Image (cartoon, rainbow, N blue to C red; front, top):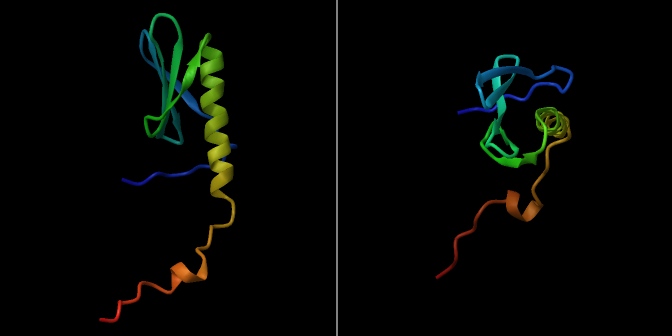
Length: 95
């Protein structure tokens, strides 16, 4: 399984999958969903991580869009490098 990151300029596309479920995609890739449980709109991202509960559908959709945009921006940052001690590899213990 691979996760594709798209630029935050690509908007989320929303489709109503059921009376209480709205699914978001970005360029055809699953981005998350909003589910109404009778009292609040619950938001989950593409990995199934709970992002919170919101009173309105617009607030819930906005939260997922903000998270998606911030993750895409995070992906553009320079990669982290490991400290030199970890890059050398493991050493065998002498007996």
